[in-house]
Image (tube, rainbow, N blue to C red):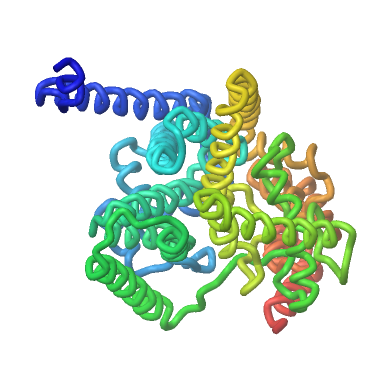
Length: 490
């Protein structure tokens, strides 16, 4: 009698009470993680507008006049006066709403960035808890919240587009795993935020190949994929119409005029930086262009290390594919998310940028979560100590790094101190001196930038404008000729 009673299911009221407790616990965990992410970046609210913030936000009628913001869906992301390029209308619309609500207060813009990061942290936790234990999922999301490589994306206003693309990609993946048609509009919103959200398709495919879909209805999954196809087709048509009479420009960078072979060798030298920044980001930089990472001319020691790391990565994916499918999913995610900016298939215009590692870092933290989960089953105390140590180290590095993006001066001083070999550091220093009415100092910095890297026509154009303002007409003409020659290069 006693055993039979024990085998009976719990009464409905008791089951409902248990379910409500689980819902409350989930809500508390999500809120705690969001608050944690916001606190770690709390000092970003004292930052101002820096570098690209000025080009996108200040003097841009699409941002400063809400009634004009709809035109962002028919124009490039960059204003025509700055050369145009890229298509990110949802970001512009968000900035326009911020401007209307805050009157252009930088603190508001930064607060919204922090909110996007907090939301991304919660979504990372939601995904992680479907793949690992609940405690490991919380650690995984918390590590994502404090990751120092996120500072550039969160603490610099225009870095928000990375946050938005990641949020919508995570949302689309979670919705797809649940079999929800909401995945389709979320994917579309990601593409309208930033073009790298296209990787959501590859992540969804790998999810369906490696992990058992939560919806086994093949017809329903076909509808989802049809929806993704329609979104991509509509996006490509929109790009064709928007850029019909204008070039789809990318930024001029170190790799702009290198041969395919040298570009790939340079990519190989970048790979150790990817690994270091994702797993041990103690040393950070706001610039990785020439000569921080110079273009390679054939095989180098760093390139050989990069190739060894790629081989190790492939072997790890194969081994995980056989023994731990969720880990294989995370490892494959890293390669997929980096691919659009890796300069392998095309020149992205940036050799390496920490902001572009925001979405790849999700997978790196998932992999760490699996490692902590495995360690927890063997040595709980050691797993706890490792998690706490990583969280404290990450939070401290993030908090101290965030003020670098306070203003142009703080940015330039830090970059020149960390990397005096960076041509971009001296170029930006020239801009800062010029804005502060120190033309001779600006001319000196521009000259240093040209000496370090002679392949960026924009430095020559700005140098020519400064020379003309100083009355050096012959020097201005020569500099303009050099800029024109660089633009004409195939």
